[in-house]
Length: 397
Image (cartoon, rainbow, N blue to C red; front, side):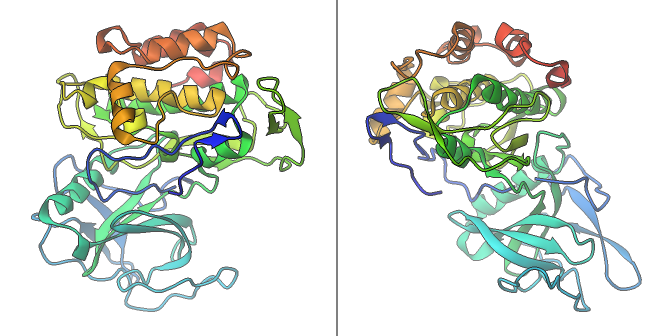
């Protein structure tokens, strides 16, 4: 993920404070249609899904072996499938003959993510390829845990995991493709969001978090603009800049019209991605320090036991960033950054917050509450007047 300049003239911009506290082979990926293949999901470490052989339609199961070092499954296909002539063939990867890799769209320490075409269903997907040779046994187990958790998740505001399997060299995740990409890049492009657009985005993220917490008991632990993907909606690319009214000479690209229930700024449906740091935590706390420094809750950095509330802190950080264009905590020095977070040192910087409503500021303040027991819950978030000031469909969790 390329880093952005923390200043633009005299104005802070969205800083990519991506210092990971815990090393993990996870990477951002991306959105789309209902699953093309029936999934059989287990709740244990050997979670499985169903796939189809290309020969005689024979059904078989593809799964992570337990232990993870066991023999890998063979390729999906034994008979070459015709590629889509309308798209290029970027490269071929042994074991991925079923997929036409079209374009590289992301990368991490141990993995690559590609826009691909499923040559059986012709569905466009995102494929995350994690190289086994770079992983130790702990990291391999972490990949297995990520797959086990992600395979259980089914919600419109969560990126779907279509299939997961392994080849001789790689672990492979086949995911929805969200062609809009990361919310981070759209914030940088538009400088900041109007309150209508920020509400449109953040309520959808909250709906995904509500599902994770209340229906499957999962805490994400890495909510941030880079892990929020979106499906684009048609709009004329901004061709002019308009004064922001915040600082002398500051301008932003025009978002275009906002349509309630549809979106604006080219942003339609928003989805949570990357479950590499997620964990099942219903009511008991956990203490594992992980996340991204600028979006990690104080109790996590302080080494205290924490709960699902850390995702609400991160939600507040994302809302703050959407509204003004830069995060509440930012510093070039990662040690200083974590100290600011641990002490809860943030403010509504002037003049960038001058024109933002008191209601929005109040909501941000209740989410960025340093004491977890006083921080807003996800249900309190939905009841806040700033969120209620919208159309009913946003509250259909």
